[in-house]
Picture 1 (tube, rainbow, N blue to C red):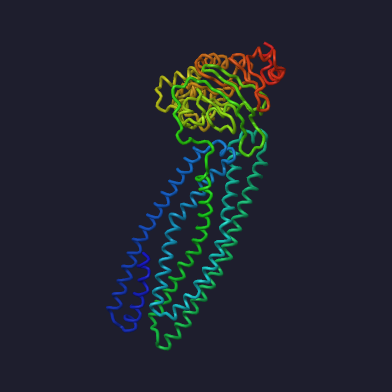
Picture 2 (cartoon, helix red, strand yellow; picture 1 turned 135 degrees about the horizontal axis):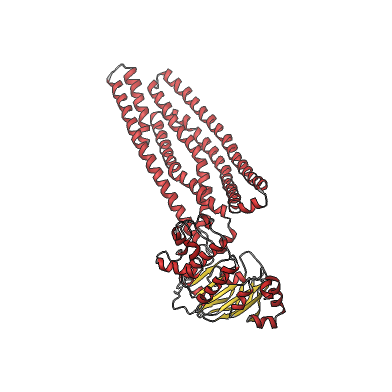
Length: 552
């Protein structure tokens, strides 16, 4: 397409010098036919260029989105602890779109502009080198202006994307916590918070516009001065008979071809800066290292019995100085139920999180059947561990899909058996479509107890040898809890289970209770043994667990 564009002035020169001036009809018809063919060729190549460039850009965006998503799935919990959801969403959406826009359109315009610029400059020099030097004298000045513009605007685009990420974070938090916002009548406060973030984004965008508005008028001024110089010098040459009128018209057209790609480069400089800033943010995620990953030569965990050992474990979260867990040592034998009890912030959840390697210990070791969990592949390790969190997390889809989340190919009979064991079958059968009922985003159509029972069924379907339960019955009523406890006791038989205790029934049914205080194990034994030997245990039982159960 660039070649067809550069050929146009030559047909115009022939039309003026040989056709109109000399009055030769064939030199009128031939250039007109040539211009018509150039228009057809340019139209065809313009379509192909637009289609192929957009296809390439969409392909790049597709690959980048998949790459970021896969990376986010594999990054450790410590990364997600530090990252904000809104920031990550902005990288997957807005930043990827900025890269796509440049890759699909901007890059092709850049290549086309460079080729047109080089071709026009060469033709100008071959046509009339003295006049060409007048035209080309403005090029270095314009490139200096563009360089100054890019240097100023690049950091501004990065700031715009960060402000957009903050805005998305506010929006995400508000939508996720809309019930709390309405319950506390904080709609005006949240609206003001969003407006502040939006105002900061607006201010940064205005800064970008100010730089753009200040740069391009200068470029236009310099280019117009160059055009004026060419017309002045070229006009004198035409008057003096050393240059034909057609050549001057063609020369002036080539001059526009020389200036047009420069203007395009000026506009594309903004796209380059925006895409560069966004690409930098995208690859911050892509290049992030996961603290928890498979070691070279990691083994597959198989034939699990369920023995779990904490051997002098020290642990702290990234960025913290003090220990969350300090010199923690205890052993769970296969089939034992271990209740973890302690004040809020004592380290119970941290102990749970170290078993499936959501985090890695800083010192010491966590072992399963004698294997350090860091020497095992993550997939094989976690496939033998079932987890039920205190806050049930479900996904948009059917009840069946949520129960079979860990085993998508599970038979209907297996799904139903897991639901019955979790005391969920009865309410599922009453739903409009039964197991095929859609439960909405995050299971919004279900009660807290119903979501928890589906979460338990999902874990039970995996038939794991090790169970991690963050007080799985805390969101159900007393009657349902009684039935669930009976089912869980039966299902935990033969499995090693760790339960973060919030109810007295949990610690009474456990084989042993591990009492945690400020990250240290301060007592291990049965409920009755600890009541007799540990004043702290008695205080926690009296203050934290169900007083009605204590009285019973």
